[in-house]
Image (cartoon, rainbow, N blue to C red):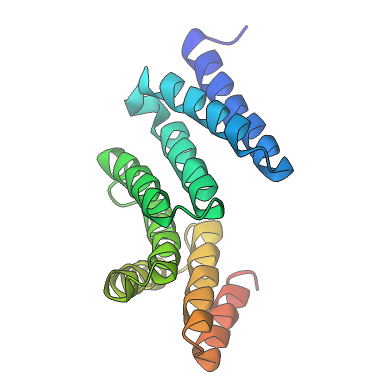
Amino acid sequence: PLDPKCRTKHKAQLFNLIGGTYLDKGNYVLANNYYEKAIEIGKSNPDQFHDVISSGFYNISEIKRLSGDLDSAIDYLQEAINTMTKIENKSLRIEQLKSKLALYQLEDKQEVDAKKNIKEAIKKADSQKGFNIKNRARIYQNASKYYLHLNKYEKALSYLSEGEKIYE
């Protein structure tokens, strides 16, 4: 049998997955409810469940963005970043979340903040070549989207090329 902490974490992860299923179906209310449940469970042991909490906040930020509430989306995504930063200050996952935040900020016409966040994320990804392939690739994908939004197609393609090199 699973120990109680492991069982609790698995339950919270399951709630995030159920929320994702409802999000995919377009049922934002039920998705949000499950993400909130995952966050609540995670808060019972934030030092060990920070990833579950952060995922819940990130997922709610997606609901808010899809619903057209960019201010709330940015707030929830910032909360996801803050949750990760409290525990893993050097994690590339934080930079991946910041690169996503840059896209939200760009969409919300916060160009200065968006530029700062995307540049920080890219710098961190560039400094960790050979490590954390998945998050580095996501940062480069988000950088590409950022530059596409600005109609800087060559720059966008260069970041997609960087992402491709990761898998070679």
